[in-house]
Length: 460
Image (cartoon, rainbow, N blue to C red):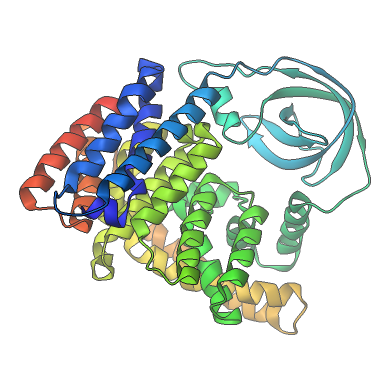
């Protein structure tokens, strides 16, 4: 029973995702019926009578599905936070981001509580300690955008209107480090290099750079994900060796410095599973590592399911881990098909030039960002002549922009949401998993057809 042997957590992940997807339509029955049904279906895809001990693993999975379902249902049925008044509260501004024509501050209040505050101008910097009075207000919910789920996935309980704001003495925090490092990068590095390193090191996207990569179909390169976490782990291993404990510390310090986005958490948990397997001397399964990471994130915050970054991160990671290295030319078109249903439904049109550029972009940016990171650190340490050496790195980034612009002008076509491509995308992911688990051709066809149809019904 290949799935039970190599990736026992895949069924748990599929079951929980199916339950969350159907919750708005079926309520509690999504967890009572859908979760165990999907879990059993996934686990029994490669069932073989003669393998001993498989029912113990299957039973443990059923228990875990039940625990996950209880946790998800408790979070989803939790009543909205009551509006309260805060007087002379102290907290830290952990984030500042554009929100339409305004800005939103995320404030972590001392003693517990995390809130979002709208401001017309970003008058308070990230990492600032403040004392304030405030009144909270519940999130709104409508068909187009559910504020409670979006902000709840980020640990924020409600809006807050703040006044009588006073700045307090500074204390150490990752938010303060992000702000100071962002300023240093802006001051000492060339423009394009600084923008790319702020995206990689801090999870801070430049608006112009974001628009350009969206036009090229490569915007995922700016989101802190397994790509960037992998670069950090690779560079750390080259410098410090293969010490799993030290690599884990460096990796998690990096993830929290960037703000711990869902895609970064998924990548971190996945790499951590591999590092633990290395410590224990056991082979790591990529698909199972992704599944473990996905289940842990959903257990911690079931609302993450409605975060597009989490969905794309899991889908793409599952696809990549099923493919052999010699298939690297196929990664870009397969990733396009697998991610198409989610991306097109959320963002609309998808540029086809991304299929071509994404064949070369990961390799190019792995090299460029690695070199830029090392030289950027040396520049911040005031190593002589680094400001001149970084001009070559800047030229490399500008050369990519020229080449990508030329490609976008040569292939100015896009595709929007349509049922056929979305159905194909679901089938491609299932096909990759069937091939990975070495299912028989006829069984693979049946599984692909069944899962694609079920996904079509649940997510359309």
